[in-house]
Length: 217
Image (cartoon, rainbow, N blue to C red; front, side):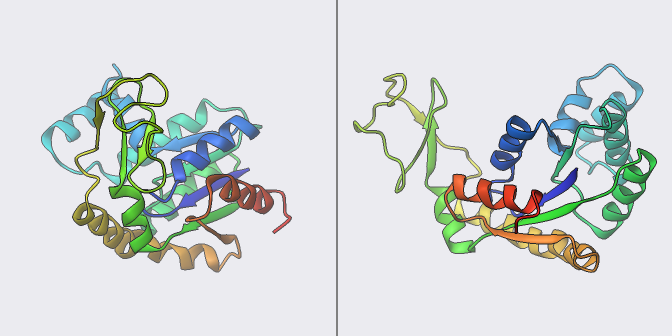
């Protein structure tokens, strides 16, 4: 089974992909992770990726497609895939169709994690983590049991990601609506788009996705 998880940054795509990997043996194909791995790889494609990224330019669709093509070639036919962060545009959607076909695969589901923008801003801007062990917390939803003390390791230092601010989050939401959301009609025409409430509890989102994949939704 090959699926796409769609949703803006912070919608929980990575979390759900990790659960599918653990529960179903699927493989998450995150273009961000693949680009970072390729950048340090001593291969012709890796050198090409490194040169583009070091120059500050955007990595072309051709390079991203080549990375995905190479990764699929390493998987067995029985291993399902989860595309996270790709495709983002109509041309990338067309490229993905061609790549999957070349590997004897097809796209089974496109699942959008629907979110409320204001609630998502609150979710992201309120999160912080232990600077020592990485345990995650939130200003509103999950404070440490003892103020300024990590529940896991007892550390007293915490950190926040510099891009977890309202301006950045809303900019990313706008980019998602402008660039990625328009590919939905392509897949809606095929009847393979489903939506789940990305603002629900993590476990509830997982159950909803499992129901879609099992044909129960």
